[in-house]
Length: 605
Ligand code: R2B
Ligand code: URA
Image (cartoon, rainbow, N blue to C red):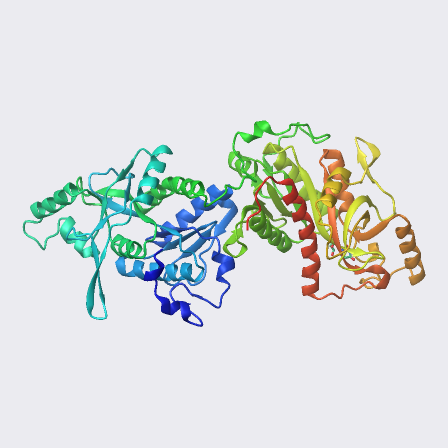
């Protein structure tokens, strides 16, 4: 960017309001836009949305059923998205609208001292001699009279801005597209019609002129001879602006109608957007290659990857029953579902669906670099019981409260994983619990789950015999989780045993349930004493079910639970919701540290 040509005034304002974007400089713009390297200007909101979806899917390898990207800040005029190092923004129709947009985006970049940002103007356009769906890349733009200048009347004076950009970006993007399988890419001059009527009158048969056909043909063939290949209505101000400020930029158009053949657009909007979507991956690849992005490897669920997974037969999981519909998740086992869930390794489960979504959002940011505020993970299960959010190779699911709820989830989720070919799995429950002789807010990583009779193991009838299934968590997995934690955690972390009750009140020896207890304080203290002797640090309600299920299925399981009170000092949970949120965050911190330690990815800044 040519800094000498940037307006010095707005840089001195105590607060600069980018009115149409709905951004001002009191906002924390650097944490949101600090890594921007590219800005893509589209015409319509629909085009911006198509691009952002394609970008998000390509960069983060997340199928779009799994997320939605929302425009940020003010959406009244332009729709702005941020994905990775790229802003995608709809600049509206015509040179004027685009000029407002490019002004405010550029001011934003200047506030951030991003002087080397590159701009693309991408659109669906008419063309000359270029088949529908083909791409035209331009660094030069002509106006309706074929002059390569953008006229701007400023304070009563007309100024002319040359509309010829340096050809570096157009050339490199053309070469890149061609070498990446897009043989239908052309270079050419873009004609930026003054307005739509202009385009109608000059380019199309219009009854205003008598000899329209010959005039029209003459005009178009002259344009063609001058090297004009695409026609839009915004590129004049775009190139005038970028050339003046020395911004690396180019104009990319996808032909939706060749005016030399006919002048009626016959493709539907849907088809046009598909053409744009089809071309998007090459843009993503170009931005990646230019050092803009590191393709996030995590969760890169290549369809062929399945063969490289370690295959083992989960013990005792019935293989002769072919489930084709998972009722409690409300998903059919079909090719689409399998594609959606293939490649998952980590199942992070929590009781609450809200906390599940929060974790998914955090993981999206930390493992894939998707900023939380822009990204909404989509629930993949349409049933009311459980929610599931996929982030790369992690599936965050909610399991509700209690053994029966978690087991219901475990059955269906395991079937789903089986069907999707995911056999290298780890199940991690992240939860809340009532501590016993441990300060509230501490984290317990469970070694063995005990039942309410204070026995390890879970008795269950298997093939007509009562069998005690072991309930220790996978110690290797627990060890890895412990190892992944930083030395100085701001809270206590212990590795010990857990008791799973079938009830929150009487089952956990409380005095604040609805039914009058048949034990007294003394008996409670006695019970707690026995608990402590067994190295049990906390009460919760699902660990036995989880551990026994996973022991049978031969799936490594672990549990990370925060204590939200110390039962030696009372039964009531009196922490405020803010305190509880902080406690719950700690379990996320611990599991995230583990997940990041397992992933060969670059943590995004
Ligand atoms: C911990 O908290 C829930 C009860 O409040 C239960 O699901 C559990 O295990
Ligand atoms: N969850 C439980 O099961 N018990 C408690 O005391 C707190 C949370």
